[in-house]
Image 1 (cartoon, rainbow, N blue to C red):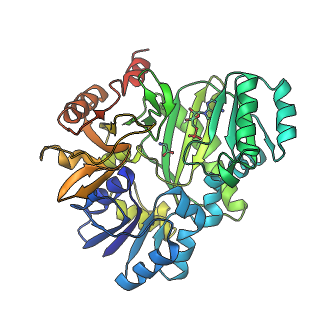
Image 2 (tube, helix red, strand yellow):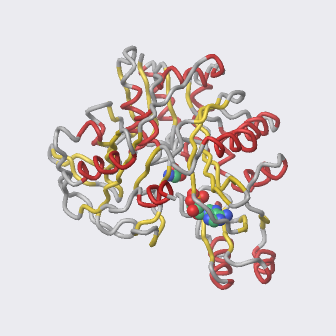
Length: 422
Ligand code: AMP
Ligand code: GLY
């Protein structure tokens, strides 16, 4: 079988490596991929948002199955375009992807169907938002309605900060059209849990839970990033919490999307917060998380392609999806300066024995040598019997990877270990 994966980061590398385990797979193309994954797939220089280019390539190569992972091509209708050309696909269509691409849609859906989430108001006029903020409880959370490269959420600790954030979004075009409408919501507290799930619109199968570390600085301080490390399973996600989530969040969401005429097929990501009142939805993503995928898929025991095709063919209820009961930890290795300005083009050295555990995100080829080309350069994942051992092994491998300006957080997993001890 010939497969095609749309996207180019560490998440896509993890998906490619897992798909390759199926003996029927003869070839995998990644559009555009990155040079770091060229040992595992053929990288094709077609951008993830070039839908006509993607469809043309799929037709020319007679691709048997396509996997679309990034949020923007999903929101732009990549799955619709491929399906219209007769290519079987994993991922939600445009109507279903709106669960991520419009936060107002997602919040209104949760309200209509009684799915627990932070209380909120939505605004399409700046004056109304500013008036509301005169009396809103502080801290408060401001979210741009549309996609904003993961930067569209502001936690405002003062009324002034809140007003500045809505003004930036609604009047100054900070996120373009994505910020024309905003959600202002209640600030919640509690540990965060990511749960990725497979769903074919009827059945939902949660994957092993995970924990992201979004802030750049140790002790969860500093700027938000695309994710500096992950671990799985998340110790806060006990069987009791999982049961509440299944009944009050996962199943109701799948049912709600179906009732809205937007059945969701693909990977639905539940970003949850375990509050004193129980688990609540912080956000939905219409795709695999990055870098959650880099710890979740290494624990998947069932063949990934088999599961994906069952999703596409709406027969997920017929198969069993199994995860190992081991633990995984991923350390993201970044360029000095990230998420602010950083330099690129430094040669990357990874020992042969570490390579199978590496997922490349920002790597390019220059004069036959792999060099850094992004802020987050790669992730390195270890799997072991305990969380402590997985973290130890991942850090040991991280220490053997080098390039100029290499840096990573040294405290990935510290919070999870502290939680376990309490
Ligand atoms: P997002 O960009 O949607 O992933 O949100 C970024 C982060 O903002 C989340 O991972 C949470 O840590 C935080 N966040 C979002 N909504 C809330 C909320 N209502 N209360 C507290 N923190 C929030
Ligand atoms: N790691 C969070 C995300 O993929 O959105």
